[in-house]
Image 1: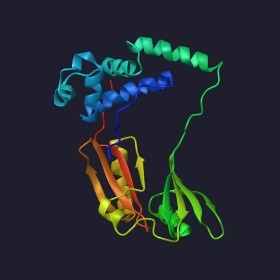
Image 2: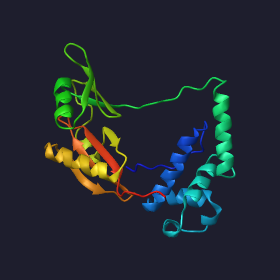
Image 3: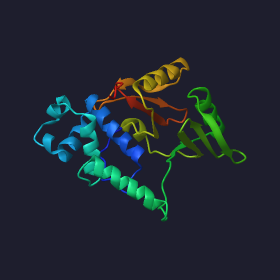
Amino acid sequence: MPAYSTLSPIAPMPNIENLRKQAKQYLRWHRERYYPVAADIRATLPKFRHLGDDEILRATFRLADAQELVARRAGFDGWQALILGARAMETQSKTSATRPISCSVEAQLYVSDVEKSCAFFASKLGFETAFVYGDPPFYAQVCRDMARLNLRMVCEPVFLGDIREREQLLSASITVGTAAEIKALFLEFATANVPFVQPLKKEPWGARTFIVIDPDGNRVLFAGPAHEAELS
């Protein structure tokens, strides 16, 4: 399950800091030879249009190229035009109503015992219990940093037969920001004797992942970059 996906044109206009972060993310993906980004580069930047994926990932790709990529995907001729447009939108937003912005998404895990599940996520995975609802409890939320998982008690099997095991269906996916963090997290969980259904490994799409399983068979994937990248 790749962490990268092709982006649609920017709408509404993000703020300037986010635009800079997008450009640096493209630069990082290229330096890590993250294959899915080659298609975006080829489709958007004229000078790479006739190159294959390997040629694009071997070619020189500077921050200015990444900035042009972000600008063109947003419908602007270049980076400076994009920055001017972003500033104009920021000014306009101060005097006009903004649309509702989704700020988070939470995975729903189905469990047979809410208190037992809360204890597992706390003692094994380092989560904290945000709340527990019901007497006896039938709903709870656990969190670790920005990651939040909702635990919902069910009294019957949610999946038919062994389809979850056969298809390796995930219940949640949690991402960290650096290669060092995903390695450290895996070692932390291994020390706590967390049950793994997949050890730490490098995926073909350029991420490093591992999968843990909770007492109810829910598979939770943790992912991060495979390599650290230095930005100039």
